[in-house]
Length: 97
Image (tube, rainbow, N blue to C red; front, side, top):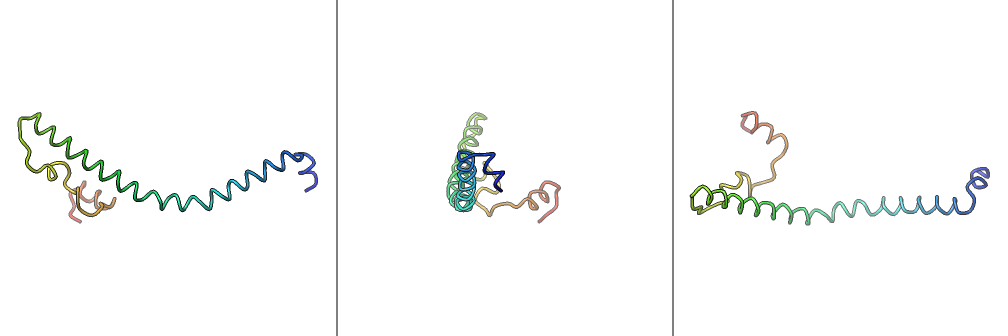
């Protein structure tokens, strides 16, 4: 261990200690950041759905159709439960869930 300290010197030891401290702090804060981002992701998903509805309305107007209810046109599963990967694969392959 003395070889390690004598090779690095005092500055090297401080840099290693700071790196370990930074990793420890990141390890403690990372789970909190993951859970804190869920509401932001929900807002982004809702904004994306709104965007899809507006784009669908614009496409229908470009085709000369006046849309009344765009929610059904934009996406079929817009307001339902989140679709799992298995459900998506079953629907894609033509199987019913």
